[in-house]
View 1 (cartoon, rainbow over the protein chains, first blue to last red):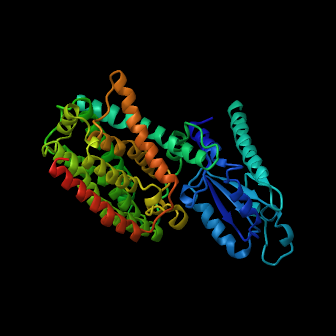
View 2: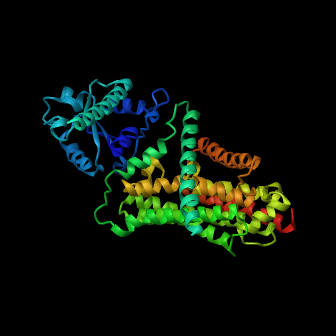
Length: 147
Length: 307
């Protein structure tokens, strides 16, 4: 694996983006930073600026107004970057599936790397999801090397 | 030739290694204070490696050259200061007249480079952060220069770092006197503001203006800024150790006392950082121009009286 990707996996700085969620998932993301879960031991920091981000944590049902901003923010992230969909709404629009305001789910708009289900998912589930993402990328890289 | 060696090995490599280690200690202690586990030891290095591998975005309408040059200017001045300090510390006869003043000027340039970068990035929050940084420089420079004046007066009005070190080797450290102690207290608090750590992290207040002047930086620009800040975490305490505590030495037991001096200063910085809330910019200016300048003037008067 290249040094670039190795370093990225060891210090993924996360940016938290809500596309119209009910705030439950956002509170659970903030719970990951508390002393009980402490994601800084994996080198993760919650950053405020999109230009510093490596991982986008996206919550919410992607309604018509926020999709524009979502696309713009995805274009602004310095690549390589990863996208994590958190919560039922961003996975499949949840209870808003028949709503006039949420035409498509998140993974039809931008490429998603890992899905974390739950309404809201527990902090343990979020951490487990991110660990799975890291494992997945490591495995993919190994496979591509063998070929 | 020997100066290039000093510049690369002592000024850059050694300072960067100690600075990265110090920033890890800082993060770890902060985590332990908050009952967290904290990052692994190589974390600052990994962060910088990662940032070097990322894409560098330049905002539309920003001045490209200024935006990319500002971090380099800051880092270069930090490396210059640290090599100047190391040269003086290793061989105190090797100094030139007025190098103290050169060091004082060069220590301001990192803050100025952050300001240049902030204004060049064409972002309202970055401009706000840069203007706060400017006000902060105006506030802390006066007491800092007054505090630096005390060792100068003590060592018979010498503005060579080498002579200040030599004076301390013969007559005992300057912090042992009343005036030296008062000046060190002032200089420590000014150092906190120079490093932009928590009571005075007004320019990059993460929760209000999301890291201020650095908001538009990504990739290698941000990596250079982080490296610069980590190196400052070594250079500024080192400067105070030379001025007030007789410098670092590497023979036998002196090595231990040198490490203790540095760790003591870093521990003080961290205690201040972890037990204080952020102040507003007007409070910071009032604090530095009021009590701090008064204490610094009292220290200068004591030094002139020979106490």
